[in-house]
Image (cartoon, rainbow, N blue to C red; front, side):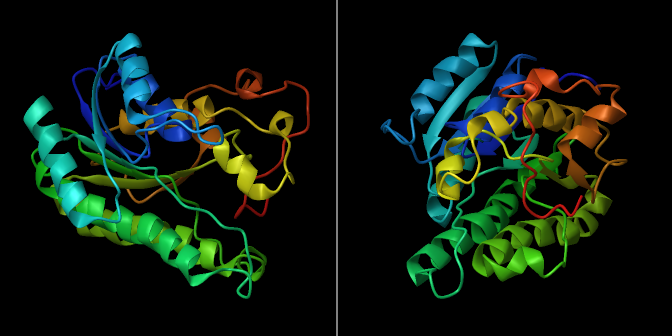
Length: 274
């Protein structure tokens, strides 16, 4: 399989950034996208809404269903899944992309922010996987893809932002466990993470430590996700993929097209020692 034509993807946080890029790449194949995100009003710091994303997805060749969804709310998830199935007949792929970030130490992390990260990153990923499961079980080539890192136990990745690290690793632990749990059903569960920092609105959370020209664009993750999601779900599960390695497997090694500023040194992302 090399195309997502006719497939239905349920993508959390698809109103902007990486989630939208994955949606647009699938739309180019003629896929259906359920946009499960909160944004219904555009803001200066966070431009774009579920409705503007839907317009872009349909212009790219796909079909879109924007459903305002806070993935911390079980009822809103259930509603979004039901609407997606009603509109498109099922769900073939779940992309757990939505994420909350705060690169702060224990003393500097308010419990409200702690709860947000765990509510979105861990609970949201688990809840969306649970809600989509009955429909994935009926799909021909079902996939769950979490935008989360490899489980690197080097203390350096915990020291400065233990709460955020625990929350992202919670998403990765879902991959570790669900890949084996769902293996008999033929549902692939994998993780995808970027080699370098990606130029999205989350850059603002890094306090200017990383400049946009040191980043790659979300399209590198979109192309890597497409490569994973078109693989045989029974043969591709339980992996912690890195974007450039996925593309290299498909013979794509010239990555200048993904650089915000080709030729500039790139800033490595978190959780990767090399």
